[in-house]
Length: 123
Image (cartoon, rainbow, N blue to C red):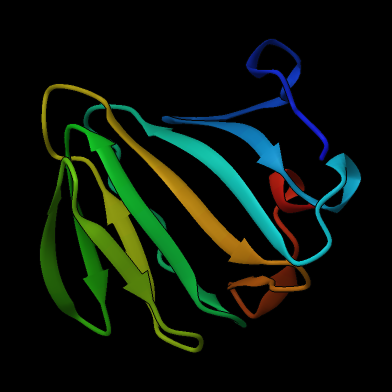
């Protein structure tokens, strides 16, 4: 069983977002990619959809998930299931970071502005 030590897990930084890649094909997983996401305070979120279902488990803080125009509060311990093909965004309107562990099937892609791509942390 492969172990990815936290100290060796790759880190991806985008404005207002940090992703720590845990499991993915490039790190030995064949079916599921998993990462730890930190959404900084004040991040408005980016609308996109997914070609496969994505699951978030909130670890700390709060976030607002918008799915097909409906908003939902996500708090510590909550799970969010984002169905494939659903317009989605995750925003942090709080003053503290929001953290979650995210699972996404290998081969799934994000779709934004009409372009499909595999997030680098899921490769």
